Length: 416
Image (cartoon, rainbow, N blue to C red; front, top):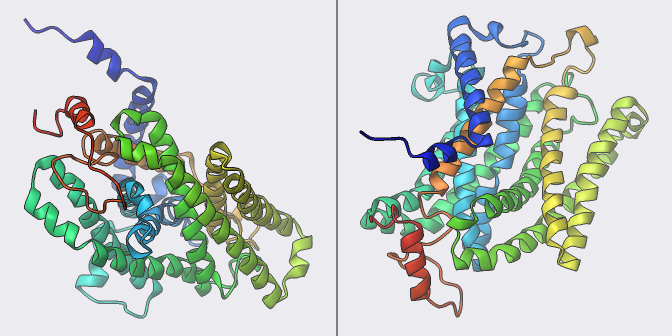
């Protein structure tokens, strides 16, 4: 009679798995409630506040933080910075899952989610900014899926389809950059439609530029943040090349983030100056705006510069956390805090606990899928059965002893 493996049982009952199980149980109940009872049963949305945390966090923050996909691919393939090649697959996977969770979140937020394809299949709304955002997100999600497929095909042993997509890398990268440029900026353009609802300090005719530039900083910082967590929790999945390039990726991306954040800081100040909104800085909203601008844009730019100059990896990693929080704060301020700022406090929107719980459920789902893929597919290492797509100048093939180590470490990957 078969008996349970105590080691396997113990490995499943980790604190993370237990907490994730509870989150999934609550999320499943709330999902059933949302799709059987409607938005009113689980949200605090209203006619005055039709967009809540599912748009502010799941969509706006999710799209911005998933920008690591196009920034890393562009750095490696368009600008020829091959020393960042090891960071491409983790960044693509993070971006693919991030955009996937954005689409899933939209299914919760839209009153009739089954009609999402309607503008594309029945009656196009080409004059709508939302149509452009939806079309670009759909196309870019498809592009990310294709870019992720080589890792999946290597895991499955499908060499010819894998090689075909590898030959399309440059075209896919350029397409991804174009689509990202369009929809990252268009998310800011959405708020140009409601100038009377957004506080003047956050409203600007340059919102599309602000959103695009800040997405680059978000993408670079997210690669550092994701790489740091993966290096800690998935260290055993990484090969010698990834480990050797890890520090260089962090400092290189920190340098890029410092320059982008400095640019973002300057154009934000320029926007205030052009629109002559200095007087608003003396109000309560002005104080909060300065907290965002100085504490989460200026300060990270300065700290990144110090980290690069001193080659301080720890400082660069913590600054990435600060930058990611700053991007989340900016998107929250634009879509929630500074939105409908003239309404009485009683009429302002605050998410229900169920809205927050569903957002946590979606983030947890994304983390679990990322861990599942990263522990099975060649994300942090290169499958020795395939030649490297882009060898660094002077780089040698993997040592036989390391290949042997990977064969024993990942038997499922090599068909054992």
